[in-house]
Length: 173
Image 1 (cartoon, rainbow, N blue to C red):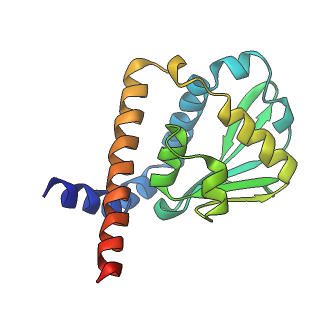
Image 2 (tube, helix red, strand yellow):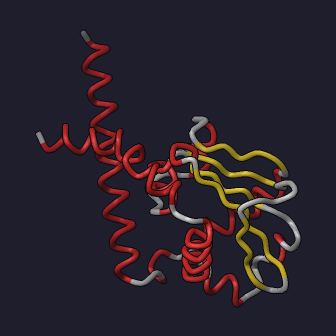
């Protein structure tokens, strides 16, 4: 019973938050993104590790939520925009997969080769972004943020395993 409920929530959860997420004004999305990025990449920002993104644009898209942001580095700070003239590289994926990547439950390369994570555009820039993401030390996150991220990822991972198990049983018959 619990497994069925979890599987259902993992399958349909993003659809439930799509409308509220899309209705959130961009100014609020931007504030949340900038504060979140500043927290997660605090050390990288202090070290100037984002210089490779200077005057270049990274598009991040959560496909199933219909959300997208353009991120750049200008005047020694991160910039989040609703639009960019053109993106230099684009990362896009489903909400559940992006949570699993953030929590280190899934490897971005594996999801890329399974076509669950799309990376398009300047491949060298994309590799630099991926390497920067890989350098994040989850232990440096505030405990409540780390806890929510890990619990969410565990829930999603178990729900996805339940879906795979159901498919295997159906295919066996």
